[in-house]
Length: 177
Image (cartoon, rainbow, N blue to C red; front, side, top):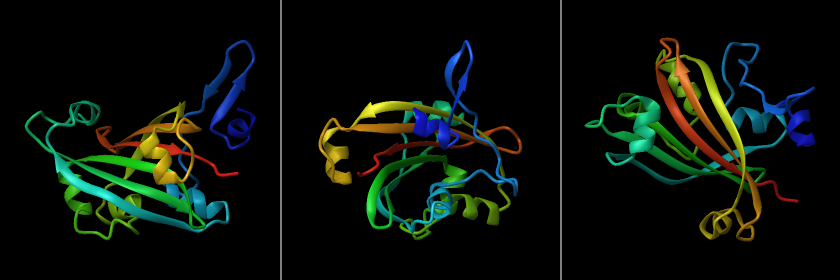
């Protein structure tokens, strides 16, 4: 918890305990993505695409994104690396009209927020939830760790200038020692 407080993700409040700080816009008015965060720490970001497909049956994700039941959602899953070390499993979901912007991109190197901005889609704000979880055997295998090892999971729901949801993501982090 102390490390998360130092990193600005949590805040200790007298009489209220420790709470998750809301995601703040950076100085240039943009929410930060994984690659930007890793680069700021002096590390080299990299991604490996696991899958990218339009799905009809992602009911929770459709609900979060306010997508009609008859529409598809693009789901992109990637392993995220910092200096060649796998540290996170990222799963992002996008309404189909936004997903179409990504599907023909090189998703191993794509920076989602830059692609959005180049298409005049600006993120205004995000809600984030951080939880402690344990790695499943599948997740552990992808990250090169043991099953049930402690991880942090962040869920982010990002909104555009019109306050409509644009992105629903889940990132499961493990820091190698």
